[in-house]
Length: 304
Ligand SMILES: NC(=O)c1ccc[n+]([C@@H]2O[C@H](COP(=O)([O-])OP(=O)(O)OC[C@H]3O[C@@H](n4cnc5c(N)ncnc54)[C@H](O)[C@@H]3O)[C@@H](O)[C@H]2O)c1
Image (cartoon, rainbow, N blue to C red):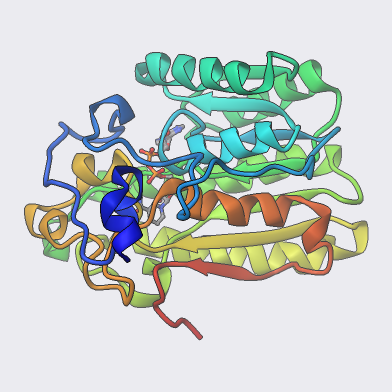
C-alpha cells in the first residue's frame, strides 16, 4: 500500500482513488481530454505489460479501437503479435492516429494495422468492414465487438424512443451483423469476444436501454457459442464494472460521476488494461476450452 502511495503511476489503482469529476459534451467522448489519462499498457504493479507472442500470426478485428477499453485491447493484441483492423467513428480520427502511432512505436512498425472509420449501425457498413479486413489480412482469427454507447435517463416514461432504438442499433444489432458477415470467414481456433457490462446483472437504473442491450448480447454469445462450438470457434463475453474511459464523462449523470467506482469492493474504478488482459486470454489458445462464458472484470462484485 505504501509503495502505491509513493508511485504516481500506481495512484489510480489505490482503493478509494477517485478520478476528478469532469464533463464531455456527449458520446463519443475523447480520450485526450481525460484527466488523468487511463492506463492501457501498465499493469497494477507499475510495470509495462509483458507480452509472450500469444497472438502471433493471427489477425484481429477490433471495433471502437480508438479509445478506452478498445484502445487497450488494440495495444495488448499488437504487443502479442496480432495484425489488426481497428474501427473508429469519424470524429475520433485524431484518437485513432494516436493509437496507430503508439502501436508502431511499440512494435517497430512490423505489424499490419488497418484503420476504418465506420458507424456500425447499418448492416452494409459492418459487411464492408469485414470485407476490408479480409482484403487487408487474408484471414480473420479474432473478432472483438467492443464498441458501444449509452445515454443516461432516470425516468423511463421520458426515455426517447429514438434513443432506445439507437442504443439497440449500436450495441446489439451491429453485433448480429458483424457475426453474420464474419463467421463464414472464421475457422477452428477462431474467437469472438463481446464487450458487455456488469449492468446486465445489476440493472443500472439510469441506463435501462443500455442494460437491456448488454443482457441481450450475453444471450447472443451463449446461443452462438453452442451453435459454432463444433466448428472450433469460441464465443465469450467480458462484463466490465466501472472503468475509467471517455464514455464516463461523456454520458453519466453528475451523481454517477461523483460516485464512479466507489461502490465496488475494491473501491476504485478499473483501468482499461485490467479489462484488456481478459480479451488477450479469450483470444489466445490459453482459453481453448472456454466458450459461452462471461468474464466478470468488475473490482470484486460477485456475480453468479
Ligand atoms: N467504461 C466503463 O465503465 C464500461 C463498463 C462496462 C462496459 N463498458 C463497455 O466497454 C465498451 C467500450 O467503451 P469504453 O468505456 O472503452 O468507452 P469509449 O468511449 O472509449 O469506447 C466506445 C467506443 O464505441 C465506439 N462507438 C460508439 N458508437 C458507435 C457507432 N455508432 N459506430 C461505431 N462505433 C461506435 C466509439 O468508436 C468508441 O471508441 C462499450 O461497449 C461499453 O459499453 C464500459
